[in-house]
Image (cartoon, rainbow, N blue to C red):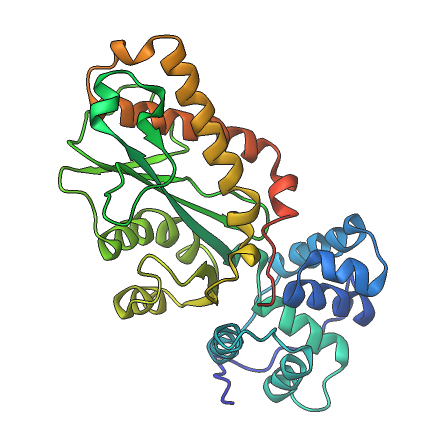
Length: 328
């Protein structure tokens, strides 16, 4: 493995907030997830999280001259083969970059630096179907969260979050005419509309341009990783190339293993249930009659998404327990 060097080798740290043993625990949690680290080392979540925060604060105070594209590329390959990142390999990579005689403490620090928590994300998608005939009759069953293969969804929702517990703005795709966004529209949710709808490649291109690139890829120093399933165009060469151009590797959950997808397990069921409940309340209160058209329904659904986003954002620790780097 070749490691690119952008400058002189960094001098050994004069003092570290964490010991080599503590950094080893942090590394294990980054490779295998926080719950696994708690069981493996018999430590509390609070203890490990405090070590992660202390390390991140120390890293923020210094400069790092090592690039880790090859290391990230290897992590990507491991995920694609349904393998967990190996601490032994990461240690060998660190010694290759820093020198065989460098202290273990420096090697652990180098590895932890290579996998920043705010650079590991998870993405999930779900569709919302609408029967227009039943909608015109104000039938509660008009809105559904599942449909037949030949049906086109009225809405698609793309959710994404980072392993530090931060929920990125959901992006709502609407198959219909674009409506003027009113003043005071929530800024924690995004809306994209087009009469003919969006193909998989178009939807992913819009999401990367409006969410992943500006909020993650352009802000993180170094490579990033996006965890996702293999459906809805995620395997397309165009999408993978777009991620690669942003120094983002893709960690794929193989078919039949969506139970490993953090957002699909923890967030999507809650959000879809909330949307269904809000829809039922709207119909029961006779609110459909006050809607001017489907474009107004799109704005309403976006506001419902904003409600959930606000709640999750205020309780980031809940999402952090779910959205952590996992081995698949």
